[in-house]
Image (tube, rainbow, N blue to C red; front, side, top):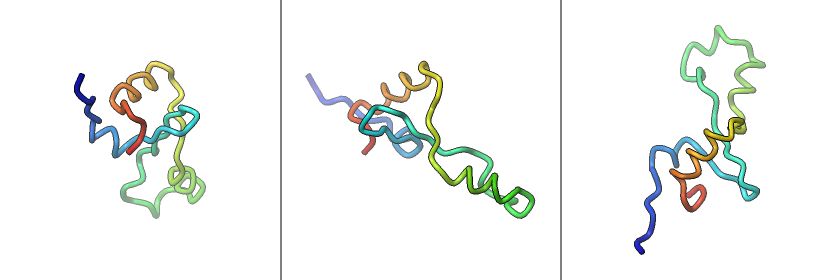
Length: 68
């Protein structure tokens, strides 16, 4: 059976930890940073866990070997 291919768009956006959690970055951090609260920008700079189990399954299907 051939190797499964990693979805490269998902590989750039998500990361799978050793325990199997799926991490992502938050949106709304591209521009207009002066108008946003510093607390908001700090929170958006960190990785956050994908909470919904259905979304986690979908991302893990796109990343068959975990994160690259």
